[in-house]
Image 1: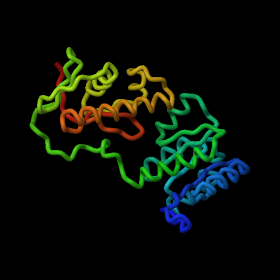
Image 2: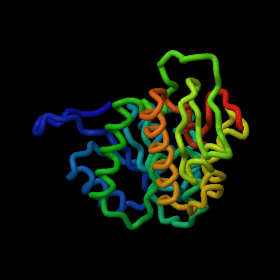
Image 3: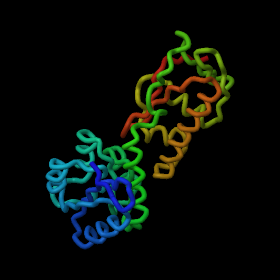
Image 4: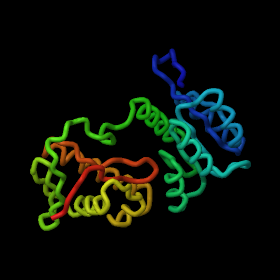
Length: 248
């Protein structure tokens, strides 16, 4: 899906920039191309669909306010039917708009005006991550279960016990996260609900804080007990706890 840039010997991510403002579209396309991306453009949802039907891209950079179709609907379609990375680029800066963007399937959300160098780096990093495959922390553990015992959440001691009985003490936020995810194991908990439970702001920064908390907790418990902690990422939804667990 990407072109080889012979001058530097690396693969240039293919990007479709969807923007109905002609001047802005040409300016961004020129700037992104100068940063090493292989850019094609579309001025409407229909043009985007026609382009990706001929040749899928690595990344779609999508404006929300298009003349022929709501950008959120396009985002939902792309997420449900393709594996392309999706960056929303819009003038809509409200928290509700951002949340709707991520719920619709956006990987990243940028508010205009944007520095195209930052946008180019974000698109390149996203393309590399997608090409490398999913994070191993987002996959079920391939390690054989050590026993038939469940995980245990010790409410009195703010601890998690592995199926082998090894205990790990949790911080207040880690404990609140595990409690929220284990009220109904196997059911995805919405990201917005988790942000509220953990007292994170409903912003991009708050969402990143949640992701960082999950990542740190996974590493902490795996390092302590030698088993992957079964918090799974549910794309465009939130997180779920995917193993049996009982509470003390």
